[in-house]
Image (cartoon, rainbow, N blue to C red; front, top):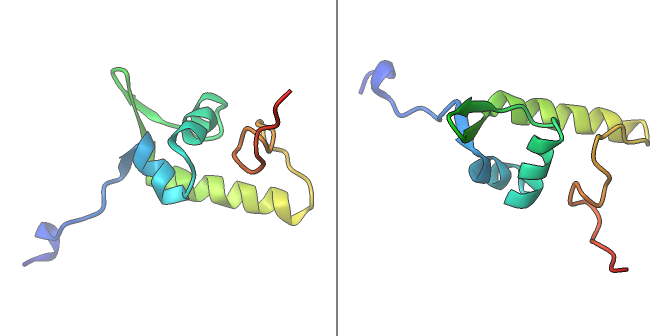
Length: 87
């Protein structure tokens, strides 16, 4: 099979598949999208996440955690890093 006919990974992922690739819940991924932490491409009402955006998110998160502080737009609890606390 020639290189042009080989199966390639998609450039855009559904939000649930992006969440799976990141190892986070779909709800957390949608919160990151809503907060502007993950850029999406829209097709009608459907959001698609560029694979390159997942890599940028990881790089941003690594930079913020290396310095010991988080500049995330979401709190750690909402980013899925800490459990929800009742009350």
